[in-house]
Image (cartoon, rainbow, N blue to C red):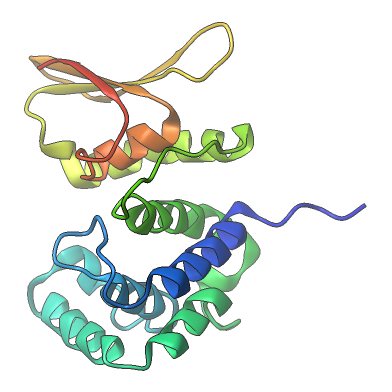
Length: 204
């Protein structure tokens, strides 16, 4: 009996399949990005460690990353999608299984949804409980880095557990806002995708 493929890998393949299906000019949920731009971002993150800091800190490093991404986006789209599908080369730490699981699962799930939910007629999909558990563990980190545009305190409430809920305090303060939903939906909300996240927001 073989182990099931890691969610980071299955989501990566699904993202590549969808990019190939919708084409380079399809919209995404990332403001200002078409499918070509999102593919270039993933490829840069996978294959250009020198450009990675610019995704976070901006400034001169951000300008360097922007130039690198603009160059990548000019490549043949089919080649970009092939690189998205194959992932980082073996010498990059994010290709190592443990690091891949920790860093790429959330990234691939979110960007898959960025493309899915920008297309007409999309609907939420069901994820395995183990994947939802992993996404739930990532919610606090994304909430800290993005702040979700909320003043005061922030609670996340997970609603998909049989027989109960799980609550995480993401930020202390007043007034307190509570965002409730399945882990994927809460993750999308705290990462700035409020327009497409299927959550219930109360308080604030």
